[in-house]
Amino acid sequence: MILREFSYEPYELKLKKPLTIANKTILSRSGFLIKIESENGNVGIGDAAPFPEFGSESLSETKTFLFGLKQLLKLKQNKIDVNKLLEYRKNFFMQRASVAGIEQALLNLLIKENGISLEKYFDVNTKNEIQVNALVGFESLNETISLIENFIDEGYKTVKLKIGRENFFDDLKIISELRKRFNDKIIIRLDANCKWSLTEAKNNLKSLEDFSIEYVEQPIANVKEFRRINTTIPLAADESIRTIEDAETIIENELADIIILKPMLTGGLLNSIEIIKAAQKKNIKTVVTTSLDSAIGKRQAVVLASTLEHDLACGLSTSNLFESDIEEDIYPVVNGKIRINKLML
Image (cartoon, rainbow, N blue to C red):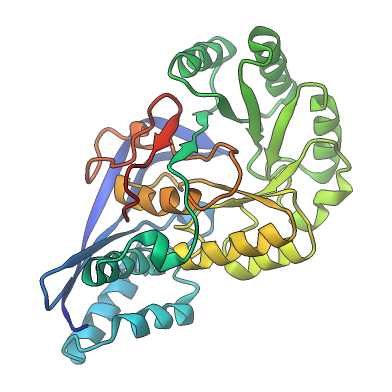
């Protein structure tokens, strides 16, 4: 296949309200919409949205990489085999968001050119329904209760609660009240975003063991010390996974009970599918989330989540956080689920 054109355009999506995560306040998400056109007129699109606040390359580095690739394609008069270009992506593992966006566009284009389904291309079984978790940030107790009541009315069964306030007892009070008020009406999972020290994690998680917590994401920064916490609550690795090598180390040494995968930050779908397969061999479950991606970037996460064999809720309810999006969300959340009639990237 000969490529006719490679282009990219910057975008910025403003959040409806600031989102505070582990002392970082996110006001917007920026990235580049990538379009790759073949000589047959088919166009593949992808989203490259780095997240430097969480360890990815910067926006300027992404722009430089995309500019360099565009110049390379011009130099070769776009006569580059798409499959070879997909292979080349492995040489640029530090440009994870760039690679994820380019890979998405190339896969999108290949599937259109060859007229095959995503399921056949990836050689995986997929499901047509994905449970989705709701997200609550650092809100007051009353606001948290109100939000969860609304989420329950909207059909959500799982809520991820951001924790890591300066005073842990403020977190504890909210979690305790939620369990009293909602009992088993809602599954609660927590995300500490590396906020605690090892000693704090030991003490804090001990205090949480009676509240039926599904799991806690990244209670401490060093995943190698997870097992020293000695808690009955399952622990999930998130920030500790930014490359396929990170994931392989965690899986091989069984350092975490659950792997949190963000395809935008692990270099795309192909890397992420390898991680899921490796985790399954060790009976480690994987939960897929977006990294506050656009509607186009979200497609990568939805496709990946559709390959999971379990029914744990995934973090795919982010489109409603933005004032507007670059395109309509083809995978809206309805009644706490994403239903897939046709899998599209």
